[in-house]
Length: 51
Image: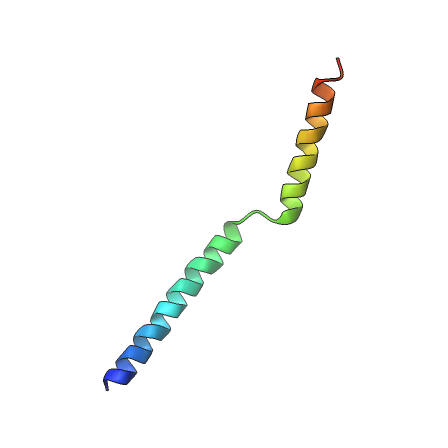
């Protein structure tokens, strides 16, 4: 009986951990967004020093 309780507790723990990881991954910025942001900053930097 104790074994089943531990298995259920472990399964619940892993489900909760996976849910938090999935939510974190959903909010994370993608590599394409990082690249476009860096390109925009470089373009703004070049135009600012073009004077």
